[in-house]
Length: 117
Image 1 (cartoon, rainbow, N blue to C red):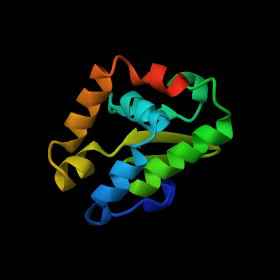
Image 2 (image 1 turned 135 degrees about the horizontal axis):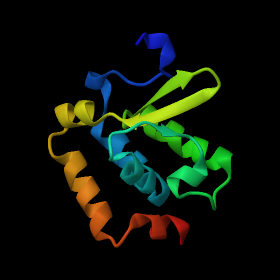
Image 3 (image 1 turned 135 degrees about the vertical axis):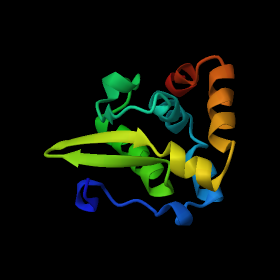
Image 4 (image 1 turned 90 degrees about the horizontal axis):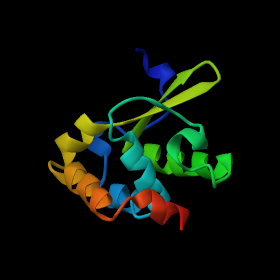
């Protein structure tokens, strides 16, 4: 896959811990992280992400914050965008961080409810 098929994102070495933690400090973005944890590609449709209560532009903003922080990558396919978690890059930069964040999201009793609240 060529680089021009991905939206701009930081190189693995440039992913900053403070930026990642700031990006994930929002309940909506934690909900997105939990959605992306299956390591698949996800469309940007809010309904498929459990965020149908939010406007599409709001969800797009949250996706951009995650991408610019280095948490996700976005593949462009025509007019469609597909988002996936940069698990290998995050694990290389901050071993154990992603697992801890995902475990905390699961133990909060479903952060989707937090995001909707």
